[in-house]
Length: 443
Image (cartoon, rainbow, N blue to C red):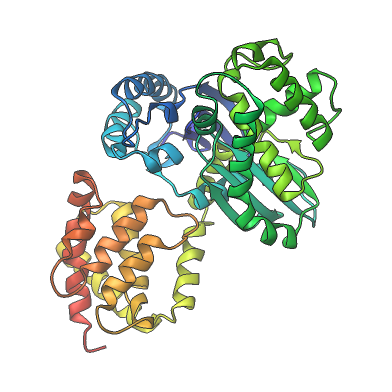
């Protein structure tokens, strides 16, 4: 890596509504953006009734990714993080799209869970606003999901991801392009019902500041300000005035008459507005301010932390070991055997492969807390389904595949979750790990 690029990082957020890219330089733990790009791809629009992305939408998305790929091609791969969110979590043919997308980008893509998206998003917001000792509520309304986080300083306390977004709600409730009291009330009621199951816990914990981090919320703040309905942020009164204006206009096309609403945002604005109304009512929000920090900024701070020995994944592993009372001495025995084998065989494993093996040695006996019988499968299930801050889903899938096959026959059902390329890298690790565990069966 050249000296000039060692402090450069890139993050790409493949959202359900927009694709965002930023390139930034980190100086004294502060991010300085030097390039950014945004395309309104509306990936969620491409999902058909069977849950597959259409060929037309995939081609359109790939065109956008080729442009992004050109802008990040000089950034070292270890300094780039590209994540897919709700639509890529849902799409049945996501692997087909991702293979083509990774070729266009020249970099790998991770699909992250909704709760992991919430954690990273909060990190981006926390670095963008002034810190104090009070709790803050952070909300991001994306194209297909909405993330809600209560945190303090740089630490998220509550994290949730709900299946509602500006694209999906516009398609579901306003597909005919009309804005009527009937379809408006249906959309708001649906959003309200999504929030109610978590509302009590959030209100009991409480917050002093509500922050809107998405394009939907920032666009709403901008429209309210442009029309003189508020001096700062969103409050229930100004929100209701804007809703009344939209109902009077009666159609999505006529929203172009609203001052301050961009033509790009207009087609999905009404779905996002219904979600905001549902959130304000269910959580009794009195005022919300907009914020520029978001998922992409959080990705860069998170990646920078990993490379500077502040990797949250290490804390996640330690927490799981403590929670399931893992025998650390046995883990170290297996790790020592693995290291000796790697030295003797002189295998050329990547840093990512070595890291997977290191994690596996620590976590392979998690399942003993549940039952000695088939404990390896219990451990794999836990790792596949647990909320693991810092981990992408593919990392959890690989760990589960390695640990499930540590003894008895190799569990092919866990390997089926991996792509062909991922299998090729994981199968040698399974062989090595089985041997290391076998060598230490006597404990």
